[in-house]
Amino acid sequence: MDAATKKQLQIKACNVRMGVIEGVFNAKSGHPGGSLSIADVLTYLYFEHINVDPKNPKDENRDRFVLSKGHTAPALYAVLAHKGFFPVSELKNLRKPGSMLQGHPSMKLTPGVDMSTGSLGQGISTAVGMALGGKIDGKDYRVYTVLGDGEIQEGQVWEAAMFASAKGLDNLCAVIDNNNLQIDGSVAEVNSPYPIPEKFRAFGWNVIEICGHSFDEIDAAFRAAAETKGKPTAIIVKTVKGCGVSFMEDQCSWHGTAPNAEQYEQAMAELQAKLAELEA
Amino acid sequence: MADVIKTATRDAYGQALVELGEKDKSLIVMDADLAAATKTGAFKKAFPERFYDAGIAEANLVGVAAGLATTGHTVFASSFAMFLAGRAFEQVRNTIGYPHLNVKLGATHAGISVGEDGASHQCCEDIALMRTIPGMVIINPADDVEARAAVLAAAEYEGPVYLRFGRLAVPRFNDPENYNFEIGKGIEMADGSDVTIIATGLMVNEAMIAKDMLKEEGISARVINIHTIKPIDKDIILKAAKETGALVTAEEHNVIGGLGSAVAEVVCEEYPVPVVKVGVEDKFGASGPAVEMLKIYGLCASNIVEKAKKAISMK
Image (cartoon, rainbow over all chains, first blue to last red; front, top):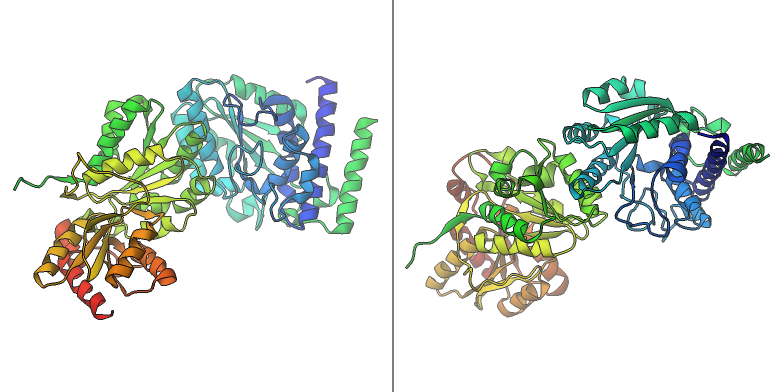
């Protein structure tokens, strides 16, 4: 990836993070931690990798995206808004009565959302169904889904993983956001899903491990996934929960808590400073 | 009199899928390792390239069906009622019901008439579960003619449908030449003035027998077949309430949450009359030959007769 592209993505990701904070602060609830950990991957996908058109969100040949870890909708909404699916000003209406931006994604209400999710473990199955549909119809679109590392404690994830490899769905790519934290503590303490790569390999998947905050590594991983034939790819991304806002980083308590006014100012100031530095 | 044809509604389901598959080349059928029993095996044999087996994984079955539906395919996903409505309830609720996707749930082996397999496989809770999902259509056909028509209608309809089929071969009483099926439209099988028996599924046939038994005692019973439990035909129920003044419901399902509850909800709010329910009395099933088990659980004409008299006495 060239330096200019990388810088543009870093700037976009910074804006996306501000969108997350803006939304969650105004809603006085929501999930900032996991939204910030996956912000770079989502920014890359929508601004560099996947084929979607905000003017034609239901194009039957588009790539599909399913946010299986639906609680991190604020990050998806911020990306979709900056991509042009709806105005960025809409982010302030997150979780408000009558808003198109529900607490968890709704494909019926939000342009650009391909599947309603929120109940963990279910999104990946729907992504598998979309990938199967692409194969049946002879389409060359690809399907992407993002899961949390805590989410893979759900048995359904492994039902889906088994089916996807059994059907050779190489048009499917699942990202595991390995920020190592879930509501009740670290994933290892609560009910360890480790080792994650070995589990996916055992289920017949191609596995790639990267840092989820390095655009070079993200780019290389998704390109490699797209070239992999005969099996689905799992990209395990090592991330920092709350990444980009100093006091939220690697803190379990920021899984599902909104910042107060003071914390909001501090978070936005940090992100503004980062943005200014990137744009300098 | 010609011999009565006996066919399980699940067999009619399998045949109707093949019929549909010939017309709609994009139709996909899925199962969870029960194709031989749910009869989706007939479709698998006819169109192997459009049949997908999820294996013993009902949660994923439902999710994959939902994802496929978003790509423009009509999908029928099948398993036993216990596992489709029961085990995968939350997947059906969140991944099919909430986004209102075009998935048809073909649930077989509903109710006590599963027989020897016993309580673990006799689902008497599915109508109650599915009824609480906004936008879910629920159809419980009474014979093979109605089952075929229901499958064809469900395929035409855009949105989620729960189709409930039985394992037991049941008598055909509808005429395949003249039968007309409309989702949400109850059918008056016989007119009567003293009481109305509102039945669904295999209990419709029992209701007709009960009607004849009541006639011998000088009681005139109307019989209504409610094949669509949701959306329910309020008009036909309220008309019966007004004209006969007493209702008996009959279903192969728990008396909690099924047809009886749905009928009671309608009349309670608009025209209260006695409603006496025939169904599984909040119990689990048990092993035994299906026909015998239905009698043991009171899912028979003689119990309907008894309850009809009770309903009339409460007028």
